[in-house]
Image 1 (cartoon, rainbow, N blue to C red):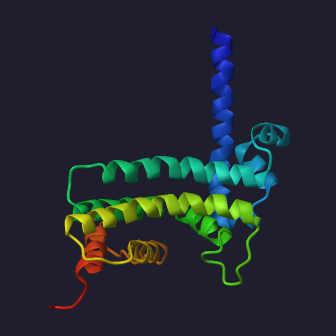
Image 2 (image 1 turned 135 degrees about the vertical axis):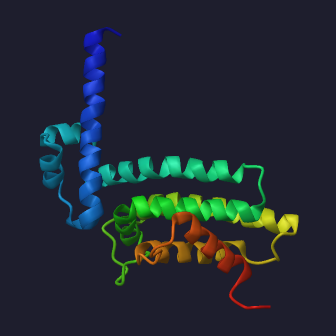
Amino acid sequence: MNTFDELNKNESKSKRQQILDAAYNIFSRKGFYKTTVDEIIAMADTGKGTVYNYFVNKEQLFYTIVKEKHEPFTNKLKSIYEKDITPTEKINCMVRAFLEFYDENIGLWRALMHEIRALSPDGYSDFDEAQVKKYRQIVLDEFGILEDVLKQGIINGDFRQCSTTQASYGLLSAVIVMSMQDLMQDRTLEETATMITNTFLYGLATR
C-alpha cells in the first residue's frame, strides 16, 4: 500500500471514529429515541452522506457503539474467569469490572436498558423484537460469565447449591443500582466491589 492509500485509510478510520464518538456522546445524554442523525452530523462536523456511507441507519450506528464498547469488556470478564484464583476472588474482580464499566458508560447503559425494556415503565421500545433480542444477548453473555463462576464455586464446594441464574441476576442488579443511583459515595471502586461481594456471599446476619 502506498502512502496516499495509507493516508486515505487513516482518514477513513478517523472519520468513522469521529462519527462514533459524536453518536456516543449524544446517545448517552439523550437516549436512542431523542437522538437525531442531524445532531450526530453536526457534532461530528461531517455530512449526511458520510454518515450513511458507514452506517445504514441510526439503529446500526447505536448497535455498533454498544458492540464496540461491550466486546473488550466481555473479553475482560473472560480473562478474569480464566485466572488461577478462587471463585470468590473472581466474583470480586468481576463486580469491580462491572462497576467500572457502568461508571464509564452509564449514559449509554441507561439508553440500552430502556430499549431492551429492562427499565422502561410502559414496556415500550423503539426496536422490534429481533433488534431487542440481539441487544439483550450482549448483556446475557456478560451475565453468563458471572454465572459460570458461581457454577464453578458450587462444584468446588465454595458455594452452596442455588439457582445460579437468579443469583447472578441478583448480584448484578445490586451493581447496577449502585452505579445508576450514584450510591458509591466516597468509596473507591475496589471498596464498593468488596462490600457488594461480601454482602452477596455472606449477608448481613451476624451468624
